[in-house]
Length: 288
Image (cartoon, rainbow, N blue to C red; front, side):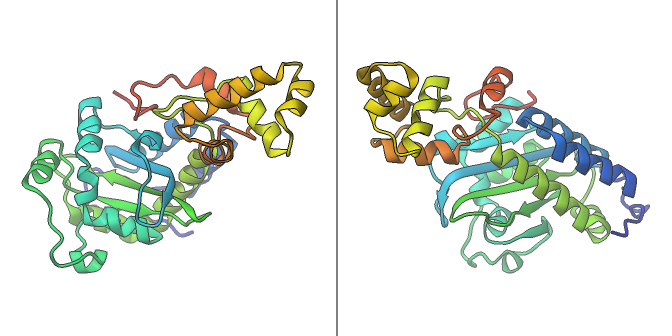
């Protein structure tokens, strides 16, 4: 990959050396928890000149439907109050490049037109959303769309330029570093989406996770009771609590939802529960 120093007309956006990029990718791929992946990703894009990052993942979404907000993974360097307002008011749904990122793979600058983003002509952004963007300096940047690894799940990332930078500055950076930006974002997404994380619904306990994994092996409650040295009613209690935690009605759905949230079949589950202490229910690794 041939990376050149950033255009001198784009102040605040330094160049990217091949060695820096290679080291970053090696560190990301060696990371074993979301906290490390997110920390490395923040540092990488800050080094490249972007002030803020917003990453959102809805593991149980299907098609254009984003799934239940309680299951979202939202990581951002925005202040907590700005992050909470963004999600509560769903201002991201009023961004044309967000809709582009849900349907496409790659990087698109915020200078893109509605036609570029493939949104209808009558697509509107509310005055409240515009005011929010100005108030939080979300005026120049780019959005990233990721490949779909399965039929469910949607994710997008936004990289926000520092105050005083323009979308023309960002476009010049994209002209030179688009491939590297996409690769770094896509690998971060692949790692973040395959590691367990606590959602607003909470995380499964070790017992709940274990009984669900035995269900996946085709074991009955009686079988699981024998294997785990528990009584069948206790096994049923763990399955009921697992369903309640995940917000589903059947054990089959609980197993599927737990798999989407990477809370079963993962050697990192216990480590993740020990290390990830949510700052808020919807922004578990927020920087606020």
